[in-house]
Length: 535
Image (cartoon, rainbow, N blue to C red; front, side, top):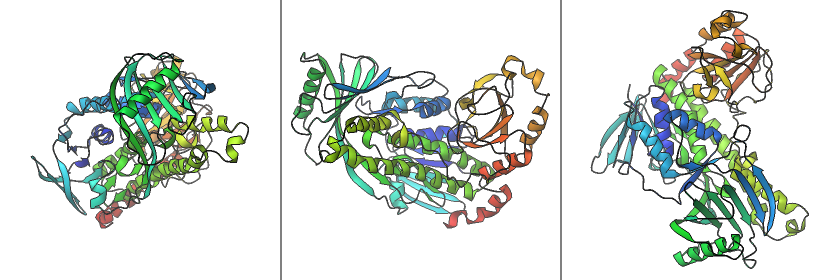
């Protein structure tokens, strides 16, 4: 069968290529550049624990080159409004990393991957699809025709794939603008991220009403200044003045030495593609959505797109079209991103409106800082990864279903589990292999060797039920899981989303839940394959 064609070699495209390769699906990545990324210290991203775990699982190595702050501080004028101290176990800090370091780690992992071909200097200029596959043409020094089973556009905001498929991309332009600088300096605090609103050294006018500082390794910092609405030109002199003014203000009048490494202007747009799938063509990342106001991170949603789509494409590639399963990619991911966009659109007038009655309401400033912290820290409606609560893959209500600490459709909590070979691993380490995970909660098993309990109690019956499921599944055992009692059975998707939790071994319920997770009956999905290219 033909490989999957991925258009775009940014973090989302490279992540998708690795995720497919880990599930034994060959792919071709069309990279319009030379195959390496220019170092830009001012172009950084913030990754939460779920996306860091995704990258590290795919690259099989720790993600280096970034910095995890020890805490987060929100200030207004000279007053500290909110402080957060991160806990590595209960509340891990987000990772702040330069984008070229992230793509470098992904490229290094792909360098030894035989199932992935990266075609450099290859810019897409046309594509055609039919029921059996997709044909794409690239121009440039190595221009040629490419044949693929599916094609995924990960080619950014100006996506050629999206334009060739005539997909509308409505939304709002220039929601926010920031002046950005990366510099090496010493600040009064060394390992805390900071959000400073209405700093006291510029009380007149809106030119410095909000500043964000995030530490990077080796004494580097990224500073972002929220710019007033409009299209005023940001000159080098203006940026240097902002740097000096900010550093002097934070140092209480003493001007610290600094080395300016990189600058830029970051403009935030909010857009959402009308369709994310047209037959065998899909969109992911910035080609499908743009967000980023109020501290939110659009790249993270792109990585979640790749994680969601990879296992569905892999199943369709290996077993034949699963139309309902492939359709669920748009329904799940578009709904999750749309919810964050709606939350930002609702909060923006409140936080950026200025003046009015709200500015005189007691406690309103503290409430505003809490909302902004949600976006920056990946919490609440603004920042937390969405759950697929209304997923078309959700099973019907099951008689044996019970509630646990994770609602259906949300990402499972990472706990220690015993694998089929008897080793202790983290639950997240078993994701992304194309298999469903069946997790039995069995207190006490962690102190005994697997050979002593694998044939005892309910294990033989559960093992037989797992073997009978409509697709490959792996049986794991955990001592505990938040909110789950003994003998609770969890069914987890390959992308780490909880399907259901069952009270004990219920083979019929487990089979029905697994079948729903695949988009319905496998036989019915295969029969629907004839209509794959008619969309």
